[in-house]
Amino acid sequence: MNWRIAVIAFVAITVSGCSRMPDPWRDQPGHPRILVTFPPLYSMAKLIGGDEAAVKCLCVATGPHHYTYNPRDLGLMSGADAFFSVGLTLDDHFVNRMREADTRGKVQFEALGEAVKALKLCLEGDGHDHSAHEAGHDHAHDHSHGDEDPHVWLGIPQASVMAEQMALKLGEIQPEKASLYKERAQALIERLKELRREARLKLKDKNERRLISFHGSLAYFADSFGLQVAATMQLNPGSEPSAARLTQLARLCKEERVKVLAVEPQYSTGSSARLLAESLKRDGVEAQMVEIDPMETADAAVLDAGWYERIMRNNIQALVDNLP
Image 1: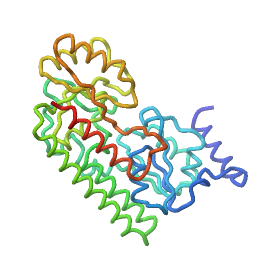
Image 2: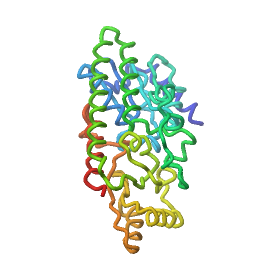
Image 3: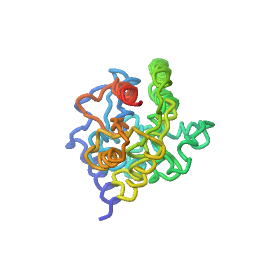
Image 4: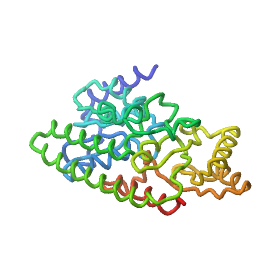
């Protein structure tokens, strides 16, 4: 039995026997019911939707690159009023399958990254100077996503567009609260603008603002805060760099004196990044491993309306503390 037959069968059973199936939203009373794909969208939805909304997140411990949906997810989508994803190939591989299997077809769906793309705020063609990403090195984008970099939530202008679009969609679902949703989104946008201003001020006098990223997720982040991604360790998420790749990165760091290796809390620092740092140390280059969270997963115990802003601030502070 292929996956389409299996999931359609599950939905049919769910609909026909709904009186016997527990409501996956029963532990979260409130409206609208908002389903999101991963933590940054959850945090935004909790903030914009407010205490009156019920919000569920599909990817928490497992990131969107590697997530495989299950029948319970279809039940969540079937009972939701709104379903938000990023799109741009980040979460499409499971979102598209879920939507194809949804026989109810009443959920209001929005791929928020498409609004970013429509406003030409993606790195390709956005009017900024990205020569640092292409000056003889691999592009900072995640190669597994083709020409589109889906990590839009890590850029301040891009995240602002996503918050604004989320508020608009929720306002369509509950017109009587449209102005309230817009107000909450605008407050978030203003705080993000201030965060960007503060961060650029703190980083402007750093002698070195280049870094090696763990995987290709930091291009928007770097662009927002006046940083440069010289290269990435993983060319594809979850694929450890080869020995030849590490040698290439070590040569780049030595030649250009890049001293910051951005590592992610979701991955062990005892593998490729540590090997690279040790190799550089033997050649007289003291490289710092700095933890930068791309926010693709989260600790469910601390995931709330303020989580996105806290992690962004933590990431900035880590660079302020470690960039020479």
